[in-house]
Image (cartoon, rainbow, N blue to C red):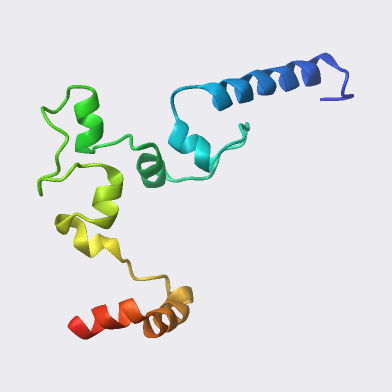
Length: 126
């Protein structure tokens, strides 16, 4: 852009400052603000699924209910159908709660399972 006192730099700095102030003091997006507290013109690098999970926007009963696209916000199992529920508790997504690591991380993953008492107990039940 050129020197720091040039018009494009001053305008960009002012715009980022206003945006940051709105982000810090806004009423929406608080859960995202905790994860990404600083505004930037650079994308955070999340894929579609990660974005839906973090923002809680997507095909989740809790989200659809907010916009009156569903009569309730419950999952088929009866609990509130938000992303955290599907990722951690729902019996219908149990197979997704733990995913096999990539080949490059498999050895470390196995070491962690073998040294973690909770994982060992779970493994014994299999």
